[in-house]
Image: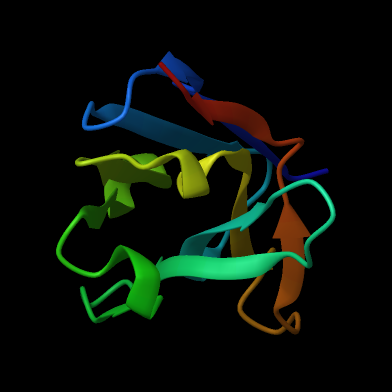
Length: 121
């Protein structure tokens, strides 16, 4: 069974920074892409950023210029560096990845348990 485990969430003041990490474990042939989504109370889950093994990135308009996604392919780990945080960034952040367990298996969308990020003074 493949697991995605997030870390790095917490409480931060507006304008502050946080770095989220997500490590995948289990039998993994590849995870591509990897990314982060978030869900605020009363709102739908939304994609924040994603990154392919080759390094191509996609960002939500609301985080462009403030968040940076990166990954370590050798460690099957993805990071989200968040800067200039705003109260509107408060949400549970979920790590995501399309996981292949072998060269012949189809990719399967996999989610972590989530980590809370709260931006408040």
